[in-house]
Every structure is written in C-alpha cells, then in structure tokens.
Image (cartoon, rainbow, N blue to C red; front, side, top):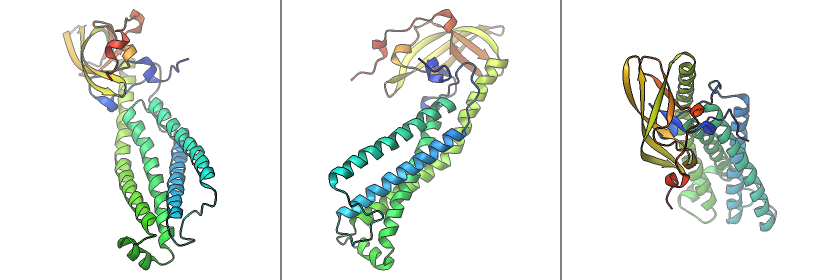
Length: 289
C-alpha cells in the first residue's frame, strides 16, 4: 500500500523553477518537512557505521601487511572465513541504515538533492574518522620514524599511506558536502513552503500539459520538458516547466492539470487526479538498454 505522505507516490512532480534533483515535492495535505530527531539519530548511526567500516577495513589491511605488531588500530585474530562473514553482516547493517536515512530524508524533505547531501555528510565523515584513527594508531609509537618510512614507501607502511589518503580525501569531500548542506536544506524547505502557501492562498485554474522531449534520465525515471497552458482572468498563459516522473506515470499529452498562481508570477502545477488522467504506455518512456 502506498504511503500517502510520500510526495513521490503522487508523481508526476512539476517545477517551473528547478531541474533534476532540485525539483521539490510535497504530498497533498502534508506540511513542509524539517530535520527531525529520527533523522538526526539516523545521521549519527550512519556516521558510526561508516566509521566502523573504515576502521575495520584499514585495520584488516594493516594486519595483511608486514606492519609491526601492535600498530594496527584493531587487531583481527579471526580466520579469513569468519572475517568475511562478519564483514558481510556489518556491511549489510550499515547499508540498511544508510538506505533508511536516504529514504526518510527524501520523503520528509521532498527533494533528492537535500536527501543525498544529508546522507553523504555523515558517510564521508565517518570514513574519514575511521581511516584517520587507523593511520594515527600506526604512527603513534614513533611518529617521526614511521612518517619517514611511509614517505619513502618502505615495506610495512602501505596501510598507513592508504589510510592517510582515505582520511584526507573523504575528509575534504565531507567538508565540501557539509558546506553545501545548509543551503540545500533551506532550499528544499522554502520550496515546500511555497507549495503549501500556493495551495492555501493561490488562485486555482484548470490547465493542460503539453509534453516535450525527455531532458534527462535520473536512473530509470524520465524528466521531461513540458508546457503548461491555462486561462486566467488576465488572459491566456503558457509556462515552461520540468516534469519528473516514472515511465508508468507519464500523463497523456493534453492531460488536465491544476495551476496555482499567486498573481506575482509564482506558479505551482499538479496533475488533476479528479479528472482521472490517462497515462502514456510505460514502454514509450522506459530507458533504452
């Protein structure tokens, strides 16, 4: 059974201002989303999970080299078979937490870009911290000597170099994502607030959607360039928009839409489900192999 609070269940989603992952949706009757305690807990679990994966992975690499005893952050004393089994279980749990965070954020924030950044920030930060702990533990016994041998690429320092590179690269990437995250969250909330305001206070008009070309594929889902035509007391209007949907939910050309207009040029468009719209054959908008 579909969740009526998931904006994607009400696709297609139209936008007269944004494209691709910036297109924002809000389910009918829903309030603009925000970062909740549940999301923050998922963010923390994602950070800890990927930190553990990074720490265990670099420690396993350390143990597989000729690094001196006691220099690996985590000494792994189990057989290869048990280690692989444990890695599969841990990996599954971490991926489940990450997937839950992404899906929760997408539903609540109404935007894939904001959800993606909210997932990527703790993921990258966790990997950076885990790799840093591994590298720092290996260097701790004699920092100057270990660093000298690592720089010269001596045998036994391979894992230190790899851990350091992983820590630096993912750390810089995490900073980049973290810098972009606040504006993405603000953008998503503003768009949802605009949709809510237009539904509540905007003038409502009947219109039609004219299908154009597929502008881009986002996974298996097409994003089309469309034209929205509608009549208001001020005359006839044609508005260019983007429409994100799935292959089975592309409305037939000329389908009825509802246009919300605030008379200042801000427009929100929704498919008129009360008109029982017909949809194009799914195969017509399925991605080619």
